[in-house]
Length: 367
Ligand SMILES: Cc1ncc(COP(=O)(O)O)c(C=O)c1O
Image (cartoon, rainbow, N blue to C red):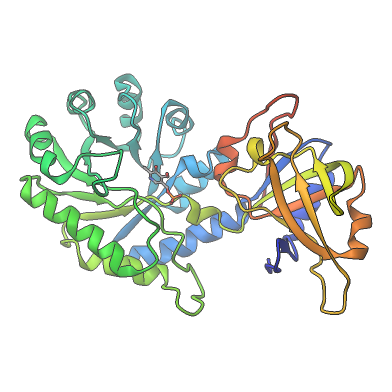
């Protein structure tokens, strides 16, 4: 896909266009899981030789088909609450890391541990007691990413948590903080975690440095951008070789793979600007996304028009996108026309919901 400027994306993969054309009326999200699979294979090919393991943070694209892909093409999955844990029940055996600020549901964890290699991440005494009483699981403490973090324990509280675990805490988990765009940031995060483990007498077997790897380039690094391979190498160098080093990115897997389809319900001019009201909604269907209209971008000689696309909910914040299109393209945006947006995050599939007569989007995948 070639990104255009000014809110416009020039093209979508043929399989996405075909799926969009075949959809019944109503909002839809379409994910190119063929691209997700290629990203998984490419990233793992970079991580494996370095001794780094990669999981899928399932909340970032909570679809059974993607969970399957992760079980086959990555080292496992990071799961949050009970719904995600249920999605993993039937997967081929793999590594599962459970990080959920809610209580550990011990029955479910036991069931998962009969099939998978389970790590339970804890940060409270109650979670620790439940996890430590579960045979066969690795218990990890969640370390706060910094003083402002609302998750995890600060390094000075780690010794007490480790001591309360009576030898069961043998792993650390850190996720959060600003998006890393330099390998040195990951290396520093890794070093801080190893130092905290040493100071707490935690016999570190596994360190999971969380997600947020989408600031790194998976394939071709444009000027100033570091590659994922360089970032993983920097982190690996900061962690003793005997410690399993794991990451659990989410967004990394669905970059460029998500699209949304809607129809024009109303075509109007507001303050002299063409606006379109769609059956899609940013608030219901497009959270954590940066939608870009798939349309021909204007050439230098074209008359250009800025069109605003609104969602159909009553919320004034429900603006989907602004896009500059050639004036002649307005004819393709009349009432009833189908419109396609790129830049949809996999997280949108998790947030997807109905509101005030606007239905939840159907979710389709193409290979
Ligand atoms: C515990 C945990 N791990 C991993 C992720 C994935 O983060 P990202 O999509 O930034 O890679 C999240 C997302 O919030 C998370 O909460």
